[in-house]
Length: 184
Ligand SMILES: CC(C)(COP(=O)(O)OP(=O)(O)OC[C@H]1O[C@@H](n2cnc3c(N)ncnc32)[C@H](O)[C@@H]1OP(=O)(O)O)[C@@H](O)C(=O)NCCC(=O)NCCS
Image (cartoon, rainbow, N blue to C red):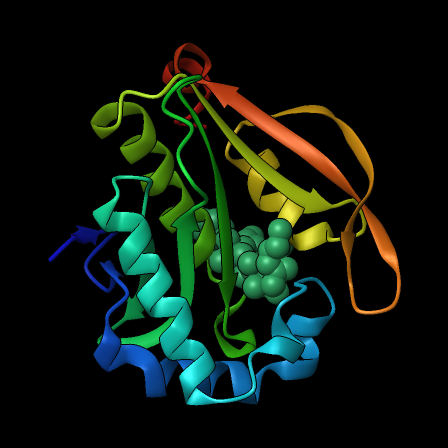
């Protein structure tokens, strides 16, 4: 099983079938908070929906297209971070994440994201990592900027949040840049 240690308290583990109930419970208790910035909340309404997400993540991993990890804080599931499908041809990948509202504000996502970027460059030997955040998602943009990513542009009305579109800010970093800026 894939397990990445972030620090003494936080580990990232490839999400598994047995995590479905815990995963759904976090979504259920964070519905309005998550809904502000992620588009899949209304289509995740039962444990079966979380299970379907986990199965498709496992399929993604089996096909060597990246993976989705549960973020575990002292053995408690608090969020998810993962790679969107790895583009092996162009050697790039996008990272996505979310965390239980109760566990915001302590750097868990920044630290987990740093580890995932290291994985993309060191294990997968990719060339470019991208993170896309809604322009109004100040907290998410702050994470990416804190990690030293470069703002590459804005794609307009690229995400549909239930009844309106938001512009996404595209952040990216190359392997060479990460060596210099990734430790900031
Ligand atoms: C976006 C989201 C992931 C941000 O979470 P977060 O808690 O702000 O991110 P982090 O875990 O990196 O924590 C950063 C905060 O911890 C603080 N912090 C404490 N210790 C830290 C450390 N060692 N390293 C980095 N930051 C640290 C930072 O100063 C920052 O505080 P601030 O919010 O007061 O500025 C979260 O709000 C979320 O899941 N939102 C809903 C879904 C979403 O928007 N997903 C992203 C879509 S692009």
